[in-house]
Image (tube, rainbow, N blue to C red):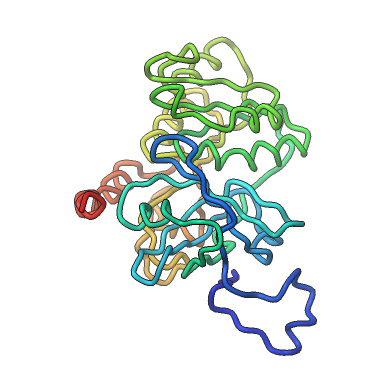
Length: 293
C-alpha cells in the first residue's frame, strides 16, 4: 500500500524502479457522468503501476474531510493515472465534486484490499449499479482477457443515470440494461434480469456484483436458488482502510471479517446482509444533514 501524499524519498529512492518520484497526488480531470455521479481522474503513477481489479483507494479532498473508500474504475499504467467514480452524498463527497484540474488531494492511499480473484470460468456476469457501473469495467476487461464470455449488466432508475455503455460494450460479449422506469431495457431491476436469464436456461458460471448494498443483496438472493457462485464487493463504513479501526467489520459465514483487508470481495451467499444493512445506516442522518448544510 502506497500513500503518495505523505511518502518522502531519499537519494537512493530516486533511482528506484518506481515510474516517477513520489509526490502529491493531483487532479487531472473531474467530470459529471450523471446527476450526483462524478468521475475523478488523478495522477498517481505508483498506485497506477500496482492497482488490480477489485482493489480500492482511500481519498480525502482536504485536511478537514473524511477518508472515503473508492473502488478504482480505471487506470493507465503508462500515463500514471487512476480514475474513480463516486456519488455525492455528504460533505466530503461534495468537496470531491468541486475539485479542479491541478488541485492536490490531502490523501490518496492505495492500492488497498485484496485483488479480485480472476480466472477462466466460462460465462461470467458482472453487474453494476450507480458508482458500481464504473467499478465493473476493469473487472469485465480482465475477465475478457482471460477468455471468459462476459455479460455486463447495469441498472439504474432511468436511462439518464447510466454511463460508460460504450466502454462496457468493448469489454463484454453482451450488455444488458435494466431501468426502473423501463426507459431502456426490458426489466425494472438487475436481479429480475438475472432471474430471467437463469429461468431461460442460460448457464452462468459466476456473477460478480458491485454497487449499493441493497442491490448486491438482491443479486445474491436472485442467484441463491440456482447455486451460482456470487461475489460481492462490500462497502461498509471505513475509516483507515488498513484494518486498524475495525469499523468495516462484517459477518461472513458466521465469522467476523474486515472488509478492508479480508475483502472487499466476499461470497454473497455467506454475507449477513441484515447486519450489514443495519450498520450502513448508522450515520446516514448526520451525513445527509451535513451535506445539506
